[in-house]
Image (cartoon, rainbow over all chains, first blue to last red; front, side, top):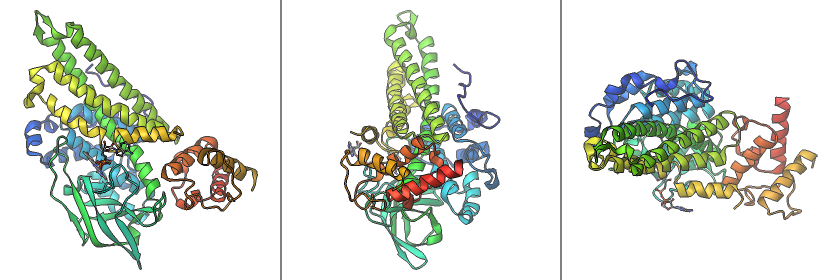
Amino acid sequence: MSSTPPAPRTAGIEPDPYTLTAPWADELNQDVEEWDARAEFPWEKWKVIQRSGLLAVPFETRYGGSGGTLTGTMRALEGLGRTCRDAGLGFSASTQIVSVGVPLQAFGSEELKSRFLPGIVTGDLITAHAITEPGNGSDALNISTTATRDGDDYVIDGGKLFITNAPIADLLLLYVRTGKPGPFGLSVFLVERDTPGLRVGEPLGKMGLRTSPISEVTFESMRVPATRRIGQEGAGFLILDHVMKREILFSFSLTLGEMEHRLERVIGYAKSRQQFGAPIGAFQGVSHKIADMKIAVETARKWLADTGAKVEAGQDAAIDIAATKIVVSEANKRTALDAVQIFGGQGYLTATGIERDVRNAIGGTIYSGTSEIQRNRIASLLGL
Amino acid sequence: MNSLADEIRGYIVTEFLDGEDTADLTADFDLIDNGVVDSLGVVRVVAHLSRTYAIPADDIPLTPDSFRSIGAISAFVENATKAAA
Ligand SMILES: Cc1cc2nc3c(=O)[nH]c(=O)nc-3n(C[C@H](O)[C@H](O)[C@H](O)COP(=O)(O)OP(=O)(O)OC[C@H]3O[C@@H](n4cnc5c(N)ncnc54)[C@H](O)[C@@H]3O)c2cc1C
């Protein structure tokens, strides 16, 4: 179980991106419980992530990236999830890759790309994307933050909530309304944190992923040059669709790595913990849970690999993305709870790190579109 | 309408109008403003084009104007398939 899982259909870069962060396991995993308790962003560990090259994987070499593929990026994040016990840090790293860098590279002007991508690729410029609003969460397209054209600028008013990395971000990608309701009423703008009229709220306390800072962001008469728009006016929804596919593939590859680690840990414990004169793994009540955990991990792996390959090949993957998100996030929650049960009283202690997994896993069924919304999407795509 | 536009028209009628054809559905009828295709509908149209005409989804320009009408969609498909040929 300790060997590197195979890399199905990964065109990839050398060495296998799965191993990128492995040499830094000790630094990444130092005092994880304390960082979690303080709910602070671990800046020194961020520097380790920067040094590992993880943040550069999907970006073109002319911007300092390593020119990796989509599936190569998934593999790198899976490796991070396997190595790093700080799921909040991993989540912030995955958000860094997908929130601004990915859409900027795909749809941004050359001027914006050459100005900002090099700093994003190194991780010196931290990024966030802002879609959700206090009044519009699941109903994400019903965005009420507006951008009104005024000469060569747009003036943006409104506010966003639950923005991962916002408290530490240098750059934010905003999804705002420039037109009437409907698929072409949204546009996307790249803004710098110090733009007059932009205010980032205090970090919000939360159940899990506590080292990944999250906050509200508000805009009051914020003036943004039209040259900061990413893509055409009205292309916001289509850009969002492009980004959400990758957000799900990237952040849930991280989750897959975390589940791989959990499975190894649980197997180790079930073999070593003795009760009634036998290792607890000898009892069917325990071993079947672990067998189910193995099935969950491999199901998650298959969905991610298959969907990643489809998206990479430019095939229709709308249902697959929604299904993958449900399969992996729900498997993560279930296996985290089972791990607590298998560890018994030890699993309930903070120091063991198993209860932290449960708190971290819950968020996965909420962010990137809740499980209910993903099921709605599948039903709708089936014509229901 | 040419045969490609007819094909796309047929797809729109089947998928978005429950098979109920209407004379209003001309080549430049605005599918978005008239509420025929909503946001998720655009995703379905992109998926359908990519599957039916073998256009890689990543090659489909994310520009609103490519999806507004049957005429616009068929012009886009014509260009994309010509470019690939
Ligand atoms: C850890 C974390 C990180 C996040 N990071 C970001 C970020 O970086 N950027 C960003 O923009 N947003 C972010 N979000 C916000 C996230 O995308 C939203 O929380 C999510 O989309 C749900 O919106 P909501 O919280 O407003 O819930 P609501 O939309 O109010 O939903 C509440 C409940 O109702 C259910 N529900 C709603 N509508 C339906 C329906 N039609 N059918 C069935 N059930 C329904 C939902 O599934 C949910 O269970 C983050 C959230 C979390 C938890």
